[in-house]
Image 1 (cartoon, rainbow, N blue to C red):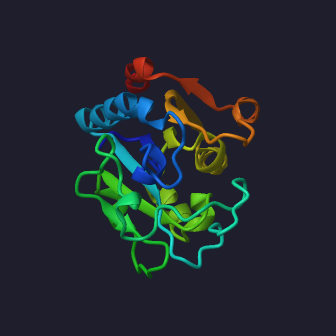
Image 2: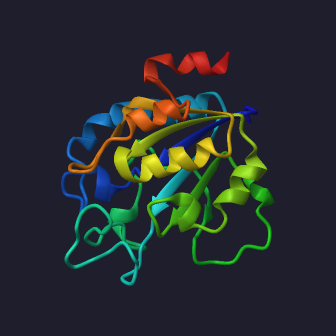
Image 3: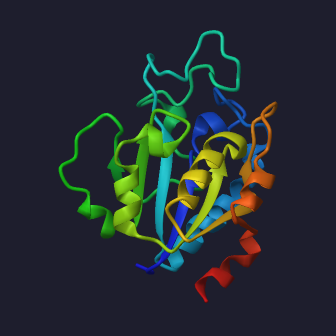
Length: 207
């Protein structure tokens, strides 16, 4: 696998991406061509991909029957439901999966699997799965390229977490989509040194 470069696919799951999804990000289906391009680019160039996924049970802290749509949301991406599956454009091939509620005695396999899935029970993948920190440490990327949904919730948390752990963080601006009524994080990202790129610029990452 290509050393130093990691793609980070955030929560591109049916419940967020499809108009029929339980927590649809309006317009998310429009980024599907860009997501497909990223998935194919990673495969063609043997780039490792970490895909994160909401994977909730009914007692999850972020679920509420009376959600405020900022800190709490209606049921979505429930464990083992269709809504928790990845859309076809990003579905990982033969992934190594790490559940947030299981015990793993060794994580070394992350270094040999091109596709890794981290399931989580919080917006922030570093808080929502106890193994995320160690997985990033073992992969030891210099550059991480982030894309997915939603821009102003889980993508933002991933970006902030990665900035603390990785030298260079890029976000693919034509491969992200936000939820309404929550502030956008672009100014904050710029202050943190995050670089915005487009799918048209992907080749530049290989140089």
